[in-house]
Image (cartoon, rainbow over all chains, first blue to last red; front, top):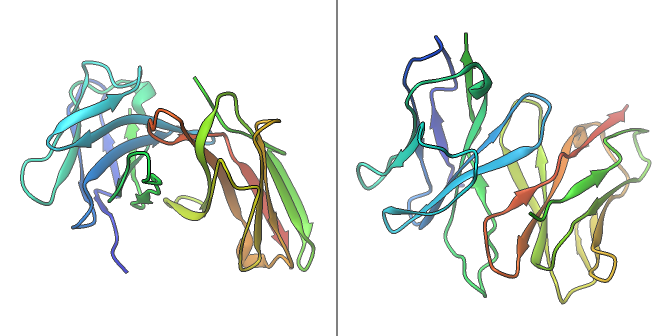
Amino acid sequence: EPEVTQTPSHQVTQMGQEVILRCVPISNHLYFYWYRQILGQKVEFLVSFYNNEISEKSEIFDDQFSVERPDGSNFTLKIRSTKLEDSAMYFCASTRSRGQTGANVLTFGAGSRLTVL
Amino acid sequence: SQQGEEDPQALSIQEGENATMNCSYKTSINNLQWYRQNSGRGLVHLILIRSNEREKHSGRLRVTLDTSKKSSSLLITASRAADTASYFCATVNSGNTPLVFGKGTRLSVIA
């Protein structure tokens, strides 16, 4: 069964450092997402991406965050200057269809755990 | 913003019993979905119910939706130890914005 793969599985970084989290969505999916989950908290939407541009973003997704699809397979989340409160599990997700008839059923990766010291 | 809120926060039952989890939300929706998350892992889609549906079944799962009360329930029948996980409801609103998740219900099934 097709999977969304994420790397690294765990990254430890110093506050102020840049971090890039990588995702390979399912190959025929068109919509891509990043969510994050602080330990024990709810899953929070960060950003969605379609047709090589951001389609929606939340208040969390400020200027420190950026996303990119540098080639036909990878989808990356960059945090420019990490803060302690960025420590969380970051999930990539993808879906093939949206719109009024689409269901927005997401396939999630296993997540990248980011620890900021 | 709309938000699914699950109830209870935690639930502990014996194997073989039924588990019921509830979800409430705030605004009109296109559909409501339930996801499962094993500890430290990603979320896995379980079932989707559209706003014009009242009940859906999938194996041991039964989902109901009451749009007048803005609530949904997930029933897992004949629970197994392997059902131990966190369960999240997520909503897609009528404007088709991305899934918004609640805080989840942590289910423990004791063998």
